[in-house]
Image (tube, rainbow, N blue to C red; front, side, top):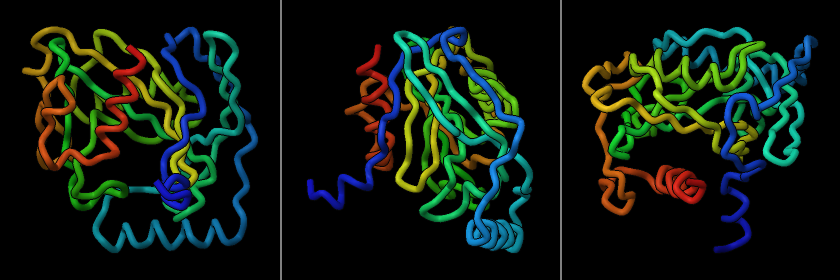
Length: 225
C-alpha cells in the first residue's frame, strides 16, 4: 500500500476492551472555539442539509480534547462543541461520535442501510447504531441510547472496544453490544434506515455490498475477543 493510501486509513488511538467503570470521563465546561473558517464551513454544511430537506438540526455535541490509556483504564477529557463542526470536510475538530456494533446472541451482525437524507453515510450500509455524544454524556450511555433510538432494542451486554480517529478528524468511540436471545425479533428500525439485515457471524460470508471499512471494523473487534 502506498504511503498516500495509508494516510487515509483510520488510526487506532486506544484499544480495549473496557467496561463502563474502566472508562473515566471528564468534561470541560468551556466550549470549543472554532476558527472563522471552521464556523463558515459548518454554516454552509448545515444549510445544505436543510435545503435537502433533512431534519438534522444544529446544536451542541462533544469533542475529544485529550485521552490517556492507563493499564486497563481509558481516560477521556471531553469538551462541548457545535454539532455542525463534524460536517467540516477534512477538519471535524475532534468531534466525538459513538459506534455501537450490535450482535445477535448467535453472533450475527446487525447492518442497516442509511436513508438518503441523513447527514453522514447517506445511502450506505453501516453496522449497528451511531451518532454524536451529547454534552456531558458518558460514551457508554451514548452507545446504549443510539441503539435504543435507532433500533428500539437494549443490549444484554455492552463493552467499549476502541477509540479511533478517522482521516477527517472525527473521533469514534466504538462499542460492541450483544442482544439477548430472541431480542432481534423485537427490532424496529428508525427513519434513518430504509433497510436492514443480519449479516453472518463469519465476516467472510458477508454480502458484496458490505464495504471494506465495515469488514476492517468487524475484524478489529474479532481480534479483541
